[in-house]
Length: 172
View 1: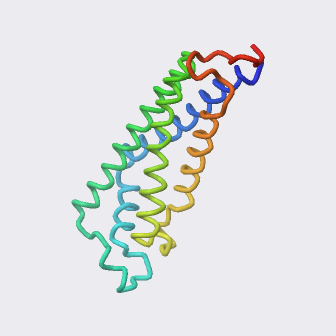
View 2: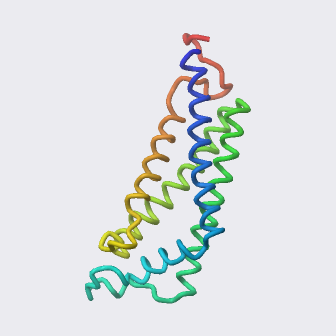
View 3: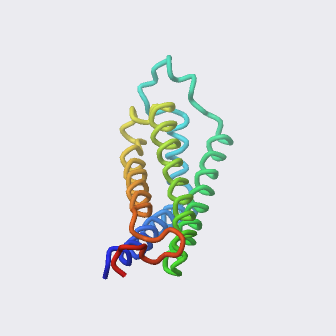
């Protein structure tokens, strides 16, 4: 198998792996709503941080806002999972141009959620890093880096961007 033929298969499998992972995360959040709801509530309330009075004004104590944030996360995760499942389908269908576009959207959705949402906003704005019990920074970093690695792979040269076949001068 040539590199040009292996790359779309690799992209499909990696995209599918991330799709499966985030689909299971979303499914778990839906079917075990209370567990991660508590996580979001504690992070937003900042009740397990150092309680520095210079930071505590940032805390969100409204259960309505906390639950709205959690539901928004679940919707975002579910949408990203569906986008990545579709991207995986397109990779296997050999529609590489569309697969790359769709997969890029899904992966960027995850990078935004886990990078901007959990690492930046949760970790820094709500000082999640200070909590021994409700600190999701390691998990968020894993998803962010996994998504970034797959994003890099799906954009590697080696497949004709227009037709999915090897380009001129490549093994075919």
